[in-house]
Length: 246
Image (tube, rainbow, N blue to C red):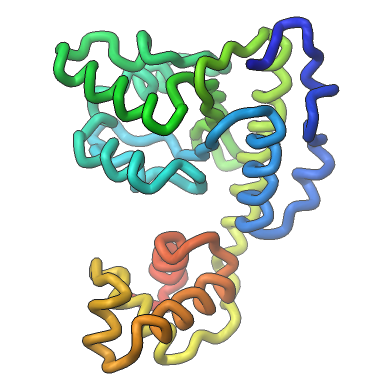
């Protein structure tokens, strides 16, 4: 818990905006957010671009996160984004706000409420702070931090929101560099990215390309590093944006 009498600037691992300004890649930003999330005693973070009113999957608008994959998959499988009270709040306000399961399940039927409560409690993420942000182009988004039974003091909310604004701005700058031609990918790396984009698993790609699963994972990991991304999903997204795969 971030206690109301604890100055945020003295919390273990608290970071300055100057450090954010020196982050050079999306992976650097991922590591920074992971470090401060753990230092604050929280479980996870997420950075998103604000979804449209017709959006159905949170993962499509997620820029960077360390949410458990199972949680994000289940969230999208249940189509929770289209009914999200958090998303509705993000579209109506521009100040940070706390979220608990009471807010998250407001208006849901009993079965859906029970499912949501079980889902977020399973990953110790039943509360959090969402910070509305925007970048220099006007792109609206949000940065969130999550934990179990967390209560944020007003001062902590203000300080975290300040850092979140800097993070979103820096992330937008780093992503704008996607237009640069990345380090050359090999044909095999591109093949593996193409099949990953088509929804194939490493085992399936190995069978298609007559390779071992270990070799496929090696190609995908190498492509991920060359593209300065965090995981293969983001590597595919960047490869699509810069035209390396179709």
